[in-house]
Length: 444
Ligand SMILES: Nc1ncnc2c1ncn2[C@@H]1O[C@H](COP(=O)(O)OP(=O)(O)OP(=O)(O)O)[C@@H](O)[C@H]1O
Image 1 (cartoon, rainbow, N blue to C red):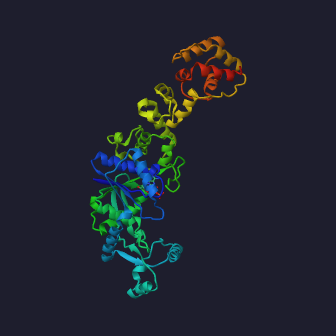
Image 2: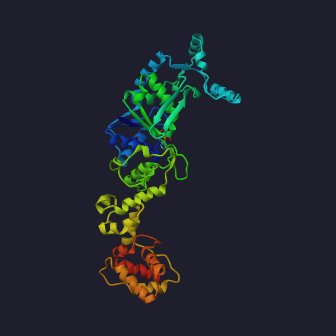
Image 3: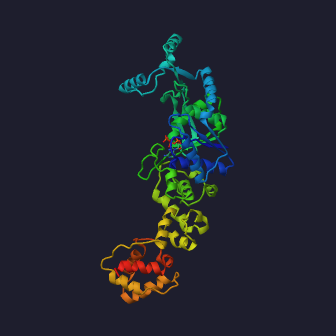
């Protein structure tokens, strides 16, 4: 079994690309298969080495690896050879029609209520017309002659699928400047690198019909190839994802402090009826089932991702996050704040709150209460019982309870409306800072 992930290095990977990469990887690792990372970089204008580097880095960050890798741009001679083979078999034919001519033909077809399919006009060219076009300095581009049949396959996610080839235009495989196009290079590579399972986004379903025809024309046996098309992910608002738009890029999520295990766990369960659980890809292998993926488009909900991230952080040991915490953060600090974090990057401002300077906002009308709180501060040393003892004494003294009792204290001590449990924070803030902050807040 051999699977491949074949992104084009034309931008930063987004969560939709990552889901496809993850599913390929999980299937391969579950069944002892091989993973190939192929860089589809024949679009020289849009492909950039820095994107290729970035996508490898992003995949590794997510916890994925691969057994083989190559770039299409290194295999131009192979595409050339395959093209010659198709030409000899009469399946690749030269065309000279310009974009404008083709547009005109399409408009006419639409007016006549006919499907706008390429009419194979180039096949009717006589050898003399062909030579004349060449003599006039024209260079042909090349189309693949599709067979007149319906291509069917059993899709691992979508079920039985069929593509009627006569309803499609013969695809251009080679541009006039000689560059081969995706439809072509992809099939040549899949065939020559021994790929057995193609798992990719649903945007490729029509390609699959064409590519199976091409696969056969190049001597491949379609029975040896399995397909699964994953429904496309949309963004939180239901909009499409694109590398070009930079939407929901792995890079950005990583920069925002999302943990790879949160993302991988969420992506593996997305579009299934399973509840997501954080886990690195290697931890998800055993529980993964391709058949559990639903046929409908799935929405990538950033809130749900954050929920996974939260779950992960709340249970994370100090040792496991230590190297990503700001300097000065110790285990007591981590245990005090972890239950309140969506993202690891949010730990830093809390370190500021316990160690740095907080200017509490004014709380008009609360000055007397805050003065009473200052006076009731328990003596040092402070521990986790201090908050309970202090607020119990204040309850007794002022008759306050609930929010009226706690909220002015939180605001004065942290400068924030919400945050980690004060039972853990108060001893970290310590008597000196707590006293200062209460004094300022009380206007004392
Ligand atoms: N929104 C999406 N959801 C799920 N899979 C996707 C999505 N978009 C692309 N893919 C899949 O990601 C893989 C890599 O494709 P590709 O590099 O062409 O990405 P792309 O986002 O479509 O790129 P671009 O925006 O540059 O056209 C393919 O298998 C493709 O089907």
